[in-house]
Amino acid sequence: MNDIDAWVWWLIGAAALGIPLVVTAMPEFGMFGVGAVAAAVTAGIGGGIVVQVLVFVVVSVALIAVVRPIATRHRATLPQLATGVDALRGKRAVVLERVDSSGGGRIKLAGEIWSARSLDTDRAYEPGQEVDVVEIEGATAIVI
Image (cartoon, rainbow, N blue to C red; front, side, top):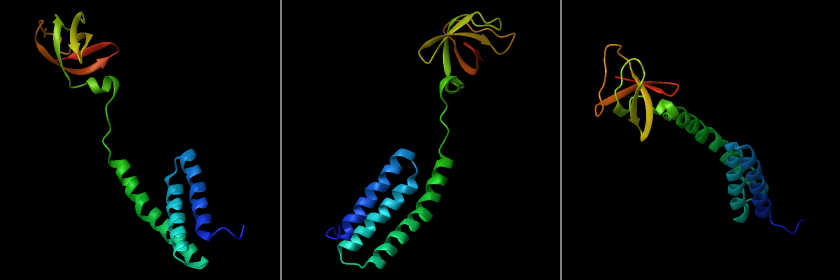
């Protein structure tokens, strides 16, 4: 065991830190792994064990102190993507069958045929007209 250079042990440690990184998806393990690689480089250029440990600690803590807040801020500012029926609100549709407030009409919305009814009780839309979807209730689009 004493025949193996210190830099190899640091690389083994870095690889070992990669396992919980993949299993738990905690990026801190990756940051510790990068610290271990930095310590391996230090060992490779002849740094003593104290210097290796200091490099490991400094690089790992620096990455956690700098990268983690940036990642947290980035995750908090990502726009929320609308999916499913939420993505259909505000879309334009074409009337296929007369749409009124009774709900018997049909529209073509996002390439699909939907049942539709008018939001305004006294308003009707004729085939060929374009309408805006304001809400989806079940399988019925509410349009204006």
